[in-house]
Image 1 (spheres, helix red, strand yellow):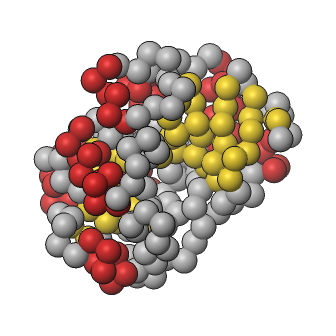
Image 2 (tube, helix red, strand yellow; image 1 turned 180 degrees about the horizontal axis):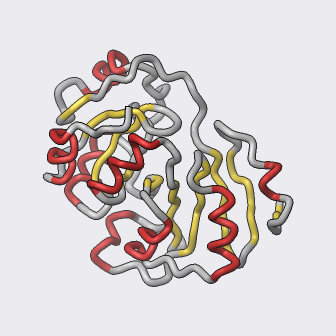
Length: 201
């Protein structure tokens, strides 16, 4: 599955939101650069706006849209993890004021560049997406579209069914001053990738 449904692309570009498979679990997705879409997702998930979403990007260059400035050593570290199911919290010192609805804590946001070709193709068409798990805050993430519909019913614009997805969330790390800190273990083991990276526990 590599070809993306044009209807999904058009709906997302029009600030619509929906449930689709990510590179880890089913996600509730919308355009990260559209305030309306992000606020819809916060409301639907009943999530505190002080808890930022992970943002999916198609390539490292997309980080510039969020005020992330990478030096060469930091980029080399990201190249070890991406594309792949590793979410990275990065400083966003030059984030534009109009993107303040993303609620960056300490001027940081979390990003992931997925390896899945279908999802990456979608991101190339739509631009960066917020993609929290498909569930109401505090309840288990949906493993099927049937479960997702119990959470959201007709309050989303589309559902994309890829069967049952039983997986773990992405690994979550922070990267600041070229130091890596593991905040959450997840779908993949990344210990081997630390061999040539600085790491803090």
